[in-house]
Image 1 (cartoon, helix red, strand yellow):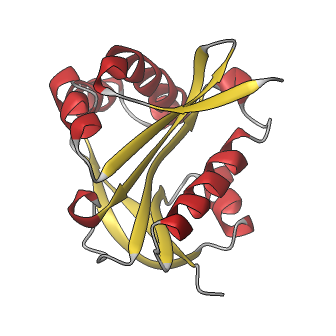
Image 2: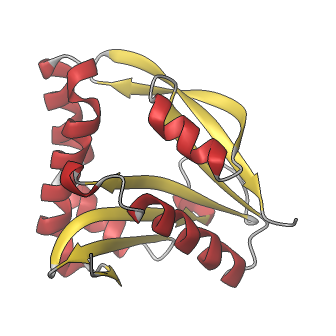
Length: 173
């Protein structure tokens, strides 16, 4: 499969919203109520919110595209854009989502490798992320890449408080 990766701009906001809603629903829809999903999607992927995220110089978004169609995306954060205060030496992988038809084709691994390379370029010493405690495939994927759990935090899905495991990979090795 021939794919390309490109950095997003605010002009990509509508396509980002579409793939965000589709992939988040595909990943978590069966484990959550329709009301909680609708509430979360309406706020998390609101066009003005996504536009502000795209415009933030401390956040970077990338599409992986097949035949110029987005099939997955990556969101990285540094400095104050991180969802937890991890300091200037850290890069956060906030989102990796792949459309279901393109999963298990190495795109997630390519995104992690890209994140690690960008962290090195930015002189970061650690890369970290949060993963839902019940997302076993994702937890195994990140463990394979050398991430280890160091903490947890609450992620609210509508009215349902859920637990995200926080995982980190040391880049100084």
